[in-house]
Amino acid sequence: MTMVIIAIQSCFNNINKTVDTPMLKIKKYSRIIDLSLALKKSSQFLFGARGTGKSFLIRENLNSSKYLLIDLLKTSLYLRLAENPSLLEDIIVESKKKSIIIDEIQKLPILLDEVHRLIEEKGYHFLLTGSSARKLKRGKANMLAGRARKLTLHPLNFKELNDDFNLHEYLLWGGLPQIYQIEDRKEFLESYIQIYIKEEILAEQLARQLPPFSRFLKVSALSSGELINFTQVASDAQLPSSTVKNYFEVLEDTMIGNLIEPWTESKKRKAIQTGKFYFFDIGVRNRLLDINEIPEKSDLFGKAFEHFIFMELKSYINYNSPSTTLNFWRSVNHQEVDFILGNLMAIEVKSKNKVSEREALHLQALKEEKKHKYFIVVSQDPINREKNGILYLHWKKFLNRLWNKVF
Image (cartoon, rainbow, N blue to C red):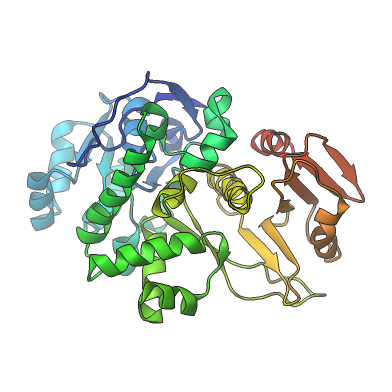
């Protein structure tokens, strides 16, 4: 896998509101996505939540002299192209460049028809970025009929942070790149949430009223990592169930959250049909709930640890095997396995420093289905071992094996 060295700087260059926080020394991290290599193969969509570093990755990963950047956040350019999308070709021809970057493509989905035509007729390569797929999905936008692949940029993960990774800090603050460049992390995350509400929800008119959505946002954070109970969330947020369902879709479409569907292929034990929901970043989730510390051996620590493993698995899949599904399993008799990666592995997450065979009882039940190759208990136990077909791995050992594709 080709690694790209980039310096993590401000991820909000295109946002008017900035956070006045003291900066730490700029660090360099390895991001797994290699845009230059991807664009040699085909045009690409690059999606990702605000603040994951899309704009900076583009600037550092692509030679600006070879690419034309069309920034739809520039009002004058946006208005001209909205009025006459065919101007896109004139702009490209004048630039004399064959590779084009269109930033925030969801703001003007009609351009995708022109992009499709220019790929077909002129052989141009496009990189199309966005932090929301809602307008594209709802407007049934032209997704280029397979002529552009989809990349998703996630917060920094264990492999990318490398020696700078600190589990306790990550469980509290998450992996947004700018977190590792500033001292006032709390203020940054609070501003991030306000910017998200302002730029994604208000500006894009994804919710009719902001106070109810803000209320829902906090309640949904409480539900992160849990089975979704729309009725309960609606009651807690003082909203109709139909509105709550729509708001969960908004979180997914703006890439702030992920719905994980249950694994339902079990034959011996009937599986539930209800999904789980996780925020894309544990730090954002914590800030919504005003969590300022995560004590070791607490229930809060256990949930955060599971959330961290979810983030690693989600980014691993999107960076290496986008067609692989990420599910969980829970039977109607309450047997549950936290994560299932396709037919490859089933994972039970425990934050304990010492685990026994008792922690693998539900994995053993799932093992009877004979559907998966590996069955793994991931924990803080430093003793790595295998017993009765179950792997017991310390989380660092597990993640090193995962990212190095040892499984």
